[in-house]
Length: 443
Ligand SMILES: Cc1cc2nc3c(=O)[nH]c(=O)nc-3n(C[C@H](O)[C@H](O)[C@H](O)COP(=O)(O)OP(=O)(O)OC[C@H]3O[C@@H](n4cnc5c(N)ncnc54)[C@H](O)[C@@H]3O)c2cc1C
Image (spheres, rainbow, N blue to C red):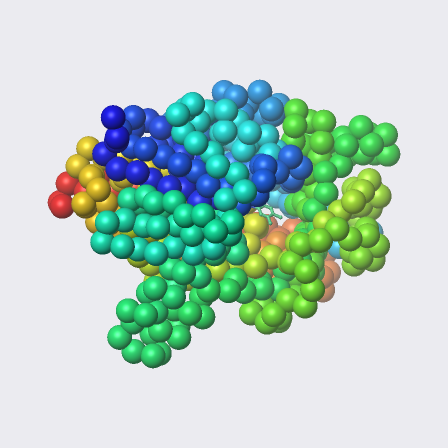
């Protein structure tokens, strides 16, 4: 028997798959997933979950399978997590340990996706090599156009096709056509292309054994650690049951934020491309860099703040809606939140095909302000960790004469970092779900 309505999800990344697993709670909604790639990625980097998004993974029942892939056990109460070191000198200065309420759960992205796929009900179809190029909205629903010339129809389209979202292009063109002034239309169209954040990251997975041989007591073998310095960060933490260290080095040129990035947005590079930037950093950083093989460079792009995540029966999710800098480790978490709330409003007993557009507006009202605030906080987090902000601290810390003064200045910086980040472990999504339910009842 056909369900209440038919949802198509374009993109089988974190947001698309969490949406699908979340929707599977409602057995009267038909779901098809269309993924542009011919198969899901088998290689990829680490991605961490803070307590707030982790609750979603518990709620949808994928947590136990995910925990089999990591040595970290979720705890409640105060949990020491990220270590901060000022590392851009011969000797590092350890100045802070971020204590969260609950654990940061490090995961390997392809493993994460595979676990989600395993939790899809057997009647859900995951169609691969189905790259959305555009869509058309009709009074009766949405027609999706794929690169291979085929089409599919649905009542609601959840566009989860990532940073370079083709759905977002169509979405913004559609809104621009309806705009009442040219200025408004131009503003909408200016959000189609992602913008460069001024950050470039170099990512690699390091075999833990290799690092242990070189540096048996290296902190990154056991801890999440941020080595910070002027215009750079090196991040390391164990994933895959501690067998692999997720490595990310950042180089910041914020004066270039918003300018076009010259070069490929992601490509394999030589270690030499970034090693010299960190050559004067402390020995622990050198050990990590020495262990890096086959790094890839990612120019970090973000999506400008959109006026809405919803147009008719189409909703943007995850990076398609609000790609952010990775400095609060929250892009995937926010993608999961979008997915969970979108599924909650669509699955609500009062939602049907006819009022699904209104339900999506509830998704927009609940999710957009929160996600866009996280985008902004992540932008500032990048500046804090690269000692670019707050200016009164970052400008002076190297000139302070005593270690006590340096530590005092750095602890003020750490306090700012913690205050901006606390939402990720001090708040839960429960209030948002409740608010969404309340809004749905006022239909
Ligand atoms: C260096 C770095 C570190 C990060 N660390 C963290 C972290 O620790 N924690 C965290 O929460 N986040 C982190 N993130 C962010 C996180 O990776 C992203 O925000 C998250 O993956 C977004 O998920 P998504 O599903 O929206 O998009 P994606 O994961 O990009 O998935 C999009 C999917 O859509 C498919 N697709 C693309 N175009 C089409 C199309 N036209 N039609 C159909 N399918 C299509 C793609 O193949 C892909 O499968 C990090 C990002 C970076 C760059």
